[in-house]
Amino acid sequence: MASLAHKIDTTPESNLSRYLQEIRHFPMLEADEEVRLAYRWRDKKDHDAANRMVNSHLRLVAKIAMGYRGYGLPVGELISEGNVGMMQAINRFDPDKGFRLSTYAMWWIRASIQEYILHSWSLVKMGTTAAQKKLFFNLRKIKGQLQAIEEGDLTPEHVTEISDRLNVPEAEVINMNRRMAGADNSLNAPVRDETDGEWLDWLQDDRDDQETILAASEELDQRRFMLAGAMKSLTGRESHILTERRLKDTPATLEELSKRYSISRERVRQIEIRAFEKIQKSVKSAVISQNIAC
Image (cartoon, rainbow, N blue to C red; front, side):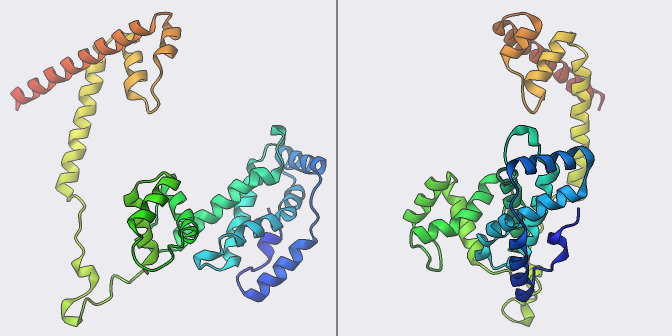
């Protein structure tokens, strides 16, 4: 998918200004035309249709990217990443849903820009959970609203206010504020003077050694073997209910299983408990037998 987004180097300021001028020449699409182009791309992989959709939304990408100028990264790079998100949105856009492309694409554009900022803003990873990302991209704005822009730690009152607004623990607010206020330093920087070596020499490796990792792996394999053997003691219904209730990432509800087997929810719960007790008894017996053999 080739478009102006790929043809213009947006990094230098002169090229950025020229780029912003050129994208104004692309007309906005009417709703019916946008739908026709979306069908042509989805059903026939018509690259001309995809390019027209991309180019008509380059101004939207630039506008969103401008909102992230406060993170010290070149605007041109932010726009480039936003354009990548725009193209991802077009690949996934379904005109049958009834939404305009711009409404759908805004999420992809912001997500692409935010991921780029998180990976580029600091050598140290800033956070991967949704709450950490929310904190990273809102902390500076809220600090400005609270007039807490001075250097150093936040006051306890400001920490509590930010924690309540963003629904994150106060400890994460303090930690993120300190990380955003600090600069990235090389691990090869000297400590005090040359005789003390480098920062790298003072770092402690908290990872488990190879023997511990191997032992943990062997123990996990043994547990899985015992569980597989214990499961054989269950009936088909008991095995299925126990698996659905306790071994799935998203457990099935009692209601769902009661409908499947045409029994009451209480009966499903009883079968689950009985199956679990059988598993416990079987595993304990296997452990005892193994200890005796050893």
